[in-house]
Image 1 (cartoon, rainbow, N blue to C red):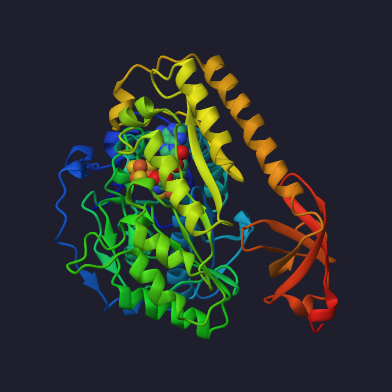
Image 2: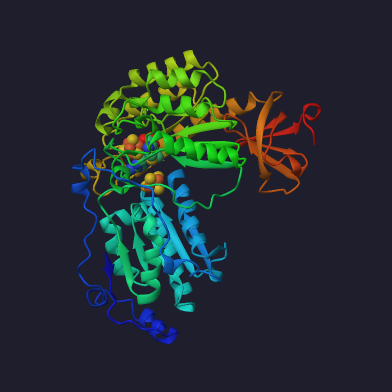
Length: 512
Ligand code: SAH
Ligand code: SF4
Ligand code: F3S
């Protein structure tokens, strides 16, 4: 759906005047027709499993090919790997239109903010950035400024942008990414604010172009959306229902990446363990991983796992090792069965511990990492202590920890957020202390060990130092010739830091 601004000016001066006058709320009704239908969160919950179409015929409209020649784009990405990968797709689309990338905002002809809605602070960052963008737009009224990603799926956000940031040229949702060339065209030629947010989840569009970041590691989507509806979480609304890509399409993409020299792929999904549930034949993540393990690519990871759907078949396949890495990110969220119940996680503390036991039995060296939320409504001190004891019991190598943030439209947001902020902060602090101590212990254990490192490039801090990750995803820095970039090499660790390891290349086994 497109919102026409009634005054369509083609000269920079007129645009400038229009922008300068866009402070007042009164203008909204005049500048935007009221045909815009916001995303509907109620409808999102009533979705049907089937009726997803897969499209293989994607192409850039003829008139948009080459339209970006001599122009530049910048995409700022917030949020998870899914968003990082969506950015690669949008970059691919813009590249096919002739645009080149830039990291300098002032040079850009198109700026996209690919947003995240998971917590309030993620959203605040974007609104802050939008504030800065206004001056860029005043300097260069031809700049096309777009907001996309998960925040655009929220009706409150779209309304706020319409009201407070009317200089934005386009807002489009997570199901509208493939429409980018057409949306740019509309924004470019009509000088209209383009708002296109489908609350119906997207179909699956195969063969979209991708401008991948780097040529060593790659993301591969295996499914989209989430049907779990954890009571605190916005993702099922912003990303739509679970839709699995067909195994043959995924396998072909991974083969193609392997043939192009990629060394590591990460399979992506909000809940990868639900892979295949919506397919019309009996096929799951374990089956997919088994097929992928036969492809000649050194490393395959996957994220994120949901404990509820983590089945024995997957454990059995992972235990075969090879190129399937046994680093499992297994968000637990809380150590209290009562809290887990009201979070609608659909497993208990005992179920989780039993799963960990099974994983460790099959893969004694498996690395487990997790996500935790503290200060969920009604979380008592005792329940929080259960989280602390679970962390100790499992011995996670690292954890992402969050203070609960109410998200509009989710069930939990309607409950009283009755834990005072200072209590939440104190719980987070205690939790982080424990998690950091465990991480340190895990890092210290590497000193003196030789680890295999996939060399990804120069270290950010020192161009004479190379850096890369181990199979267990630990960052390692070491001195070595740049010719090793892209290879997997042995490194002997001599120093453990909080977030990284320093080591020396083991030269007798590597040709340098
Ligand atoms: N699909 C993944 C995680 C997606 S979001 C899973 O189910 O595990 C990443 C993490 O953000 C979650 O694991 C959770 O710990 C955290 N999170 C999600 N919603 C949140 C909220 N409303 N407040 C605080 N943290 C939240
Ligand atoms: Fe959110 Fe739960 Fe789905 Fe993860 S499984 S994305 S936490 S609803
Ligand atoms: Fe954020 Fe959307 Fe990912 S809400 S965490 S960018 S799925």
